[in-house]
Length: 160
Ligand code: SF4
Image (tube, rainbow, N blue to C red; front, side, top):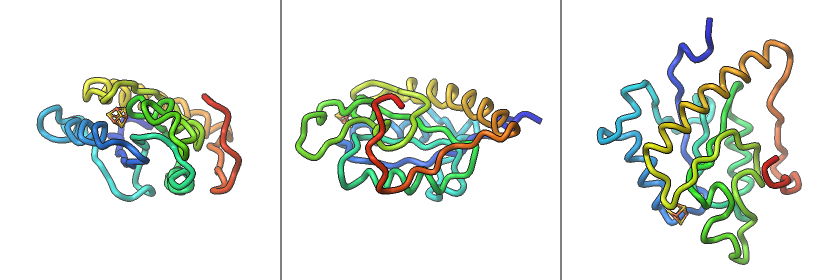
């Protein structure tokens, strides 16, 4: 049976966004764009989530939180960087405490740029992430697994 015969559940974390992208994430899930009609449910529990939606850039305080949520998610799991800040730091890239995009903390599977990211782009990214989940599910059967990222691990290489 295909893994994605089930609907994907998402968890959203606001790293350090201006809240512009968070509003678009909500718009994606609420009746206007209604990703829920495809069974995309927003859960607050990482252990129930298939897809990790991150808005905002990574900084020295939230990098541990992002890694904690990622590590708690069951496999297969996919990560979407939502908005330019999450993709590569965006307008906050040269702030004193900003490290960069989400891929400096954890592996990112899909980049959904935009300032703010548009709900249409998020829906496309979720569809893309479903393909990634299917591939990872097949890889798991061959013994390949997602890494556990220690909270205090060094910053990852950009795009790793
Ligand atoms: S990408 Fe734009 S809207 Fe989204 S968090 Fe960054 S500054 Fe705000």
